[in-house]
Length: 204
Image (spheres, rainbow, N blue to C red):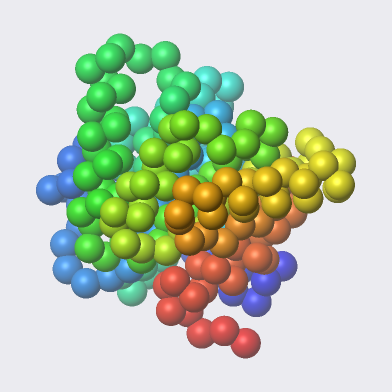
């Protein structure tokens, strides 16, 4: 367990908002979690905070339909964005989700970093590449979690990590990357280190 784990364990849900004008105003720092609907985003949030039921998980991907906000105190928030690319919804709803996600990533001024959650077995998809572009347009930091790393052997997982690193570099985007598994608690301390820096938490 990382020395800052208790800072994330105090996370609490505060609101779900359908539009940017419903987001909290004033100074602060937000870190967004984004990714395909079946990449394990909610499980990652729960593992990172040590709160098993903080973010909703279920058998049906695509349940995050609004921007969900989790407070860490002193204006610091974790933000769970709508998943993309899988949910079986009508076109109008899907377009509304995409517009909300795009507007948040590009326009939210207190967004300091985005964590892109990717299934290590799928690699970088076209939709992930589109999100990379949005993060670049927003001008904030990017960290990539390759989730479900426990599903691959160590050598295969390492190869997938390097392949994704090359793909991101070829896309012209700066990012840090790591292996992650919510079920095996792999990489949680590493994520905490990244978040500590983004949020301005003291480090030891």
